[in-house]
Length: 152
Image 1 (cartoon, rainbow, N blue to C red):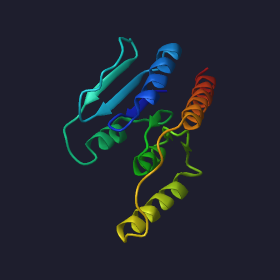
Image 2 (cartoon, one colour):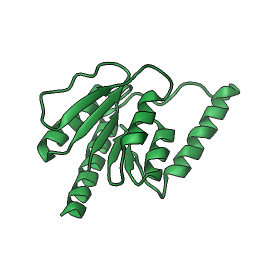
Image 3 (cartoon, one colour):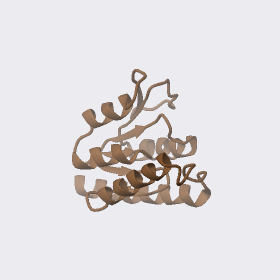
Image 4 (cartoon, rainbow, N blue to C red):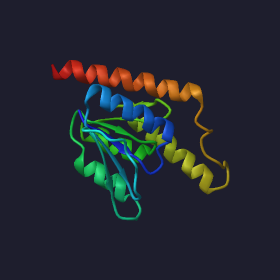
């Protein structure tokens, strides 16, 4: 398993959880962003800075991800792309995207975008709260534990 992080908009609290988990479990992790991302000293954590541009970081992740990897992203289209390649995706609120559910989330996301475009709704998700952070940490632990079980 390799953890890929769509780091441009990943909250600092979530990155800190990921840093601890990657180091504790010795899971390779790469943060991808179009700006410098500071990482702690680690043998398993690195960052890649990509060029500015629409979906450059997303496309880099999709190109590199392989079956069995985990991608951390709040971008549902990116989640759909990596799930199609056999990886899993987890958003910072703890929503685990899989082959069974990602299309439903993508449909809801597209519908919400259509509603915003015609002025029916505005705004985005609420601020990240303690419950969401705990949901993320719990889902991450479950995915890592299952990944380690299948690798042995």
